[in-house]
Length: 378
Ligand SMILES: *Cc1c(COP(=O)(O)O)cnc(C)c1O
Image (cartoon, rainbow, N blue to C red; front, top):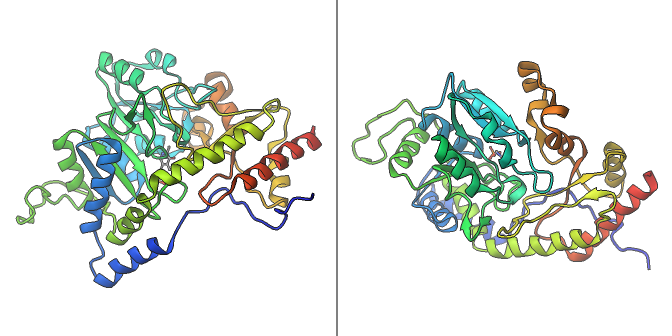
């Protein structure tokens, strides 16, 4: 029988928004209390539980959390910060923005996470921090990163932007580094539109984040209205917090559904023409992105166009950051030689539709169309 999916559209991502989520937002709008109130506090409590940390501070977006982390740890001019060569550009941009220098390390070709065996070689006396990324929702080898960092006295700032709910040996990401960063962008599992959360077990740092997000106001002593730092406005609104709180009520359900859909991809996609993602023992994948790397002989642009004609969205998954124009022009890297796996993932990687609301049949259809398109092309 012919497939029934011909008229269906499968973009890369559709946020999962229910009438309850909308009602939660409406309620805050009707209250007139729009900025950083009760719902921001509730959101911070929820994240503290999920990430198993003492402190969570909500801010306006994920990039702002990384920015506050670097500033609060005193990282700036003359300092070096180690960053994986394959991630979203924001991970390296924040290092540039505080005047420090990003030092890139290649990734592991199975997991797209930083290759821990290559970290030691780039540590110098200028290295102040490392920002390991839990790419696409899978924890990197974070315990190993922590142990290298301890030996070399450098800070670990986890970029867990895509990885809320991910774990290594039952310990949630966000609880390993001195600080960690989460994003609530619509491409992540739960979203506030724009939003971010910074987690830490260090109360002094948390107080600094609270001051810095709100013009430098003393958050410990709210009656004083005293400004103790030159801060930013990185606040989250209360209706955004209420929106994401409502989604967090079904967070487990979202992750379970995504795992089920990812399993369909893993079973159906033709592994002879692409490298499928690997989930190592001791980790759960939260599948922010389902990302494959195509055989080099496959023309990715042609495949993306062919899939688009069938209503299937796809795109590259993340950047080989040193190969993007700004970094290439500033530092002149030889990307293919220095970061072969990051470069491969950037040039042959493909992110596929995966979101709550797809059915197993939808994913089976998408996988079949991908296999067919590749066969036609070869
Ligand atoms: C999404 C993302 C960010 C940035 O988060 P925003 O909320 O969009 O600022 C940073 N790092 C990684 C790895 C991301 O995936």
